[in-house]
Picture 1 (cartoon, rainbow, N blue to C red):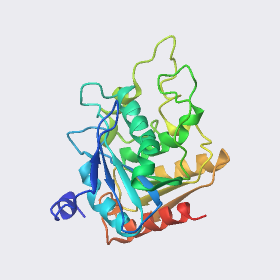
Picture 2 (spheres, helix red, strand yellow; picture 1 turned 90 degrees about the vertical axis):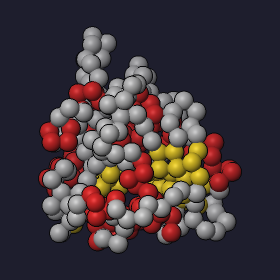
Picture 3 (cartoon, rainbow, N blue to C red; picture 1 turned 45 degrees about the vertical axis):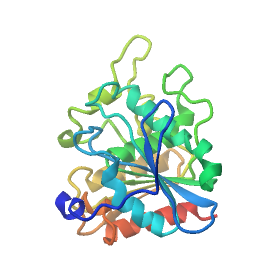
Length: 268
């Protein structure tokens, strides 16, 4: 599939668009029923660049998951091509949007004990980073005293290891995302790359299309092997005859595996 195969479809609309204090807005998709609802915390990709994609690229996936009984919180963040984006702003946006679920939960009947993360492409990096926040040192501007806990994460075509992010997508993005080294921050990967923060302490599932050229299967397999070696429960799932687009396109085998993985993580 190519991007027009997805983006030329009628685009579903969220139940609510909600403001996030100190960050950008996000979209909440609610299923039918009384709740409390399990939650998918969703993060879009786009090489960390807003001119490539924003959160609406995930509307199709969000609507499909909502129809399966999940509340979906589809968040936004400043790209590295926007004022204030990059390090630390992109990460701070993501963290604030995630933590806003605590305030939203009572009104929208969200179950804070059943939150799983789902990120596509660059969003796969950011969702794994959210799971890793408890490992970040207090000296970092990205430190959170009480980060929102996730039951696990699914990375579809994810770029969780910033050391190996492909140049075609990330060549101009990763240096801005990492920020500048300094005497006080000599290792720019230490608080930004999930692979440097392993073990994360939650299950991690990396799903990649066999024909994905943005995040090739070897990246998913390498990351899952590193996470497993560090003591995490991690696996890589490679989908035959699928590329980067199918991973977030409802009614494809790749997206069906994503939904199955999310359900497995949310189960008691």
